[in-house]
Image (cartoon, rainbow over all chains, first blue to last red; front, side):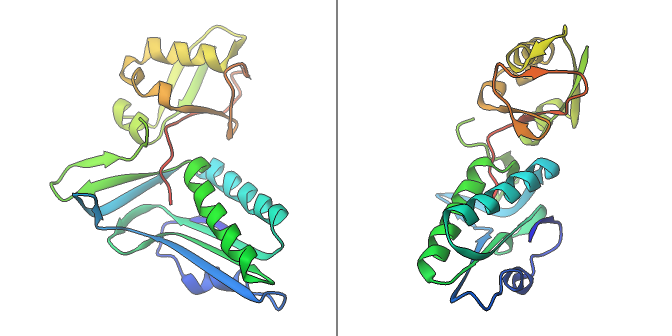
Length: 137
Length: 81
């Protein structure tokens, strides 16, 4: 399952997508909205995406992960729009026969998603200002 | 030819629109397109060097050619997750 959604992420739906009798390990990663980044306080986040390209990139990452590791299933969901503190913006689930592959693939998937998938977050700071997050820009 | 270019995040914020139209002589490349965008939309001058260009939903290289039927987008540094 690869998706971009506007509503809250259903963790069980993401987990169900990778459930398999071949799996001895199921890993779920959630990226959640953090209140503090250093000294600065976030009140909410807004996410934008280039949906067609993002879905294509996410599908490619899932395929690459399946080539790199022996996986039973991969699911990736990213939420876009307005998110309050504590809400999950991204969920990645991986299942595999043994846990090492699931941990390694899960880490690689979230790290690589953050590098290549065209999705952007805008910080809503507690002082009332907003700022698109573009590292190195 | 006229190229429509999709904008996102800070690029969209700078222009205040989801898309710009750039006039450029065909045949052309991604590198030429960058030059044309900078000339015709100076608001993007400081942002563009940090951005990638996507052609038909794939990251493109400077030498890649562009035709007027291609879907082109400016991709600022991503920050999903």
